[in-house]
Length: 251
Image 1 (tube, rainbow, N blue to C red):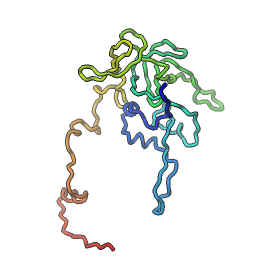
Image 2: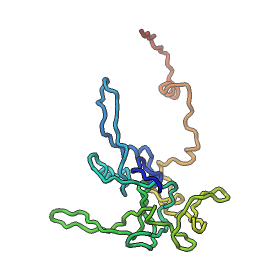
Image 3: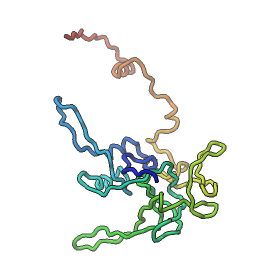
């Protein structure tokens, strides 16, 4: 039986890819400072930051994630089984193995790799009441509940439409592909797996004015020299320095 670990401390690579945001921005949005020393010369600057977060269906850079991870909130401890090779992507056709929709097929429309969760479009749904107030009964909303990829869903083999486990292998040309462990057939990645906040597919994305193009990445824009920043600016502006600093003595 694989060893269970506590909630992940970092954001998964799939979440970063879907957001299309810099990693430093995500870390800054998640950051919570529990305590720090006063900013004074007599104190050594020490900062105590939160290390573990409770990951949910809300993305780490959202306001809802911050609310769910506010200091003082006590949640039931959750353990996540580590998945060494992730094989589920948005747009995959899967079969539900447990629950009221057992045996049904559907498409994955949301992935939370930090919790080993996927959501299947239109299946494993539940109702929740939102907007309830004193004089308003609220409104019932139907939404998909998450399913564990380890026990509750399985990929569908396109060759015979049966559930199967998958693993990553290499073709003779060196391409890394998903392969069904039962039939040995390749399970291609869906086109929806390329979708991010900015585009549906890479090929249909139109470059904007502020985008960094491939030509800009290939061109060298900075050449290091034995100069300070001020000396470099003076040379480019044609400023010649004829003053000399006074001698300084240290005792």
